Every structure is written in C-alpha cells, then in structure tokens.
Image (tube, rainbow, N blue to C red):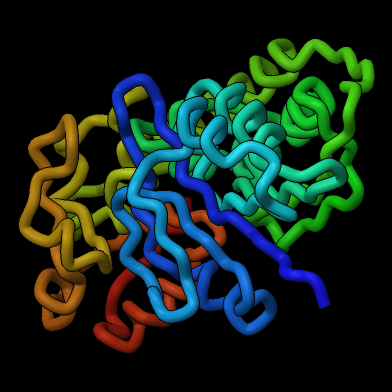
Length: 291
C-alpha cells in the first residue's frame, strides 16, 4: 500500500491571524491515515502522536516549499474567518500531487443568512459567501468538484480534485452575496422588533448568546437598555463585557438559576432547543422568547 500524505492547513490573512488548531479533525483523521497526517499551523494544540506538525502558516512561501508533496489537503471551518481566499486555493493546488484531493468544510452561509443567525457575519466571520461562490472558487483555481456533502443546516464539505488546466466557470457571485445580506438584514430587523415587543419592565430580561450571536443585534441598532445582561456558556466570556456594549456576559447558573421574574431571549438559531432544555433544568420558572 502506498503512503498517503494528507495536510491539515491553517491559513493567514494580511494581519497574520491564524485559526487555532484544536485537533478535533485530526482525531478523526488519524485512524484512517495514520501513516501520513501532517498539520501546518503555528498554534496547533491537538494530538501529536503520529502527527507531523509544521510550526508555520499555510501561505505562498510554505506551499512553495511543499510543492507536489501531498495526496490531500484538508481545511475545516477556517475560510469563514477570512475575506480573501485565493492564497488558500493557490497554495493547496501547489502542494498537491497531480490528481490530489482538496477537502474544504465551511459553514452553510446560505441557510444561516436566510435564517438570520447572528454568527454568520461579525468580527470573527467577515465574509459572505454563497455555496455557488465556493464552487466557483474551486474551478477558478484549478480544481474539479467531485462531491458536495451537506451536514444539516450547519456545514458543507466540498471534495475536489486538482487538474492541470482550470475549467471555465463564470457567475456573478457579488450579486448572490448582496442578496444574502439583504435577507440577513431583514431577519435581524425582525428579531429586534420582537425584542422591543416582549422585553417589558415586568421581568428581568436576559439575552442568551454572546459575541457571534448577539452582537449583530446591537450593531444594527438594538437598545442595550432592554437587557440586564447577556448569558453564555463559554467560561472565556463570563464576567466580561460584550464587545461594543456595556452589557456583561454571565454564567447562566450564576445569573438566572435561582431568580424569579426572569425572561430569557434565546438568540442561538439552531441551538435554541438545546439551550432551552438546559435553562429549564436550572430554573423552570423562566419565561422564554425565541428569536
């Protein structure tokens, strides 16, 4: 059996930002490709047994040093943190052997924007890309798409193969993205109107879902005065101010577990049901408003 070398890539933007590699994907890949899994990421924090770690960023220089060495390049939920994608596709094409495979997983932004999920566009996710846009980018940079997989409303994965000559593929991706943003703004506006309707002074009002989920509401003009604070499950955000507001993020167990006259606005999109069950277990008397 020939050796199969696969590369898990982290990319950089002009500011030098790298998405931290926590190793979740590597844990899945290792049992399948234990003979040749490699990671390129200066902030990799995952498994190291059986893994070759390149302590640098994936870019033009590093891909040139690895030209034609890999059977596959894998990237999972990294591209949405950037506004330009050419370096990733050019570098992947250069790293791959002839006929090599490129596996790219990104959020299903078409679904997320249509639903108005707050984590689609914010400081961490600066780009708006349709699924057609991702298809176009593959063909533009020398890949033929072999398979597209959808994972509920969360992600899409595109499996593509390197070809010698790029194939023509023309589409107005800018207009598609602008249409998504129009839908997004309409959905965010509807959620702000719902908050203004239900956030009455008879109860203490809390908004669940920090940064990625709740920030867009305030960016588009929702008044902070509606809320006592923001609830979030991440310990990294507890007792810290939500960017751009005076509201403090709190641990739900500390903020609402033992209180009466509490109203919680759930603003987590596809995670609303899960968090609703969590809060009900903490305090069955909470009144819920789903955004």
